[in-house]
Amino acid sequence: MLRPSHAHTAFTATILLMASTFLSRIIGLARVKYIVWLFGRGMEADALNGAFYLPDMISYFLVGGAASITFVTILTRYRETGREVEGERSLSVILTTMYLVLGGAIVLAEIFAPWYIHWWFPGFNAQKAALCVRLTRILLPAQLCFFAGGVFGAVLLVRKQFSVQAVAPLIYGLGTIVGGALLVQRIGVSSLAIGTVAGAFLGPFLLNWIFAKRAGTHYRPILDWHDKGLREWVRLSLPLMVGVSLVTADSWIIGHFASGTSGAVSLMSYAKQLFAAPMAMLAQAAGAATMPFFASMWSQKRQFEFATGVADSVSRVAALGFLAASGMVALAVPLVELLFLGGRFSAADARECAAYFAVFSVSMFLWSAQAIYARAFYAAGNTLVPMAAGTIVTVVSLPIYYGLYRWHGAMGLAFASDIGIALQTLTIALLLHQRRMVSLASLEYRELGRCLVAALSSGIGVAAVLWGLERMLGYPGNAHLAGQIRWTDLGLLVVGTAVWITIAKRVLEKTGSALPRVMMKRLGWR
Image (cartoon, rainbow, N blue to C red):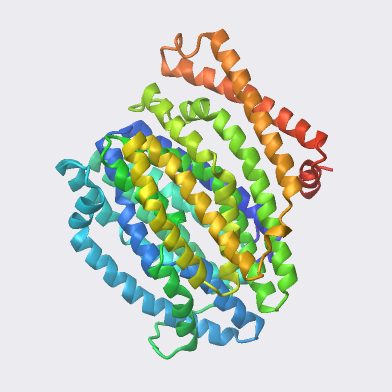
């Protein structure tokens, strides 16, 4: 399974990418912990977190998911019809064209970064804004590495080779930490941005390029505006570029409003990144693993298998999303304190961050389901409908974010995020249903109901047990030192996790759920 040339099944690919995503998120959390320890929720932390917004926006609007979504679809079509040589030429044309376009955009962004920061983060003072501009300019070139790496990675994905995709994010995540460890004493927070760019070059770009070349792919600089593959890529990618999905815009919108509250950009970013760890294991890993298989089914006109495959995948990740959310909400405070408390990050900061994390976690099943639904459209070569729908949902959601922020401050933004992703998921699901691509009736509602009951039961049970233990221990009132708090949090996490697993498993078995049996069988434990 770990050989770069190994051709995976949908299940083994999902397991591999889930394991990779888990390790990547562990490294990501170590990266966040490092930032939290050094800078807490202070000016440097807000500036660093804000510095990622402009590079992300450029990548989103100019690349538009071309590498991981549309390019997989195009290369799959070439491979299924025996036109791999033509596909390789189109790869070179697209990569050359986009390097010119993306490179030009990055140059312009370097110039106009001060105006952007002032506009998008109106709450930043002059000193914080200036620091954010400097960090933004350092991070911008990394988008060239991500795009090229994504294109070469698509070559491997089409061949059902996922091992490199599993390793590349780990290298990227380590870059920030290594850069900080080597240079933070000399150049401060800028060292983390430099390390991030180095990680993007060594992992997502260099690793994918090396193994794509070993697989027989050769890149040649070619400009050909009449290339059929380029035109097909533009047709598929243009909707992704001109539209905007709330899946991506959610963090941007939160950052825009939160800039008016000191430290809120950092705290909500930390909460989002902690939430992204389990969410990525469910949504992103499953979505990335199933995308080539969905594309292959659709190109071979196996619509029934396509529909049932998508519905089964949605049912599984949503069911697991219910269960994961219950544990995350109940264990939010000890988890955040254990991971982030210390250095310039106080206990009060940890409690506030945990509250945001708990609210984000409620929507875990929605984030998981929409990732599969969206890829069903992309696998069928239809990017216009989901992006048009996503843009409308984003526009409709803006007053919700604004209103809840004015009403409840930063916490209102967390609630608005949950409402927005609910609208996004429901809209995409209804569109698939109306086009007779994936029926809503195909979802396993009984199994979802059993998992929801198990999630509520286990979450309530854990909350009750932790409340009793905290009262008995007098926590946090008698825990004055960060070290004492962390040991107490570790104990609460261990006990809470054991209670969560016990109650959830018991309820699932009593209600007749097949999930425990299927998971144990798939993992080879029974």
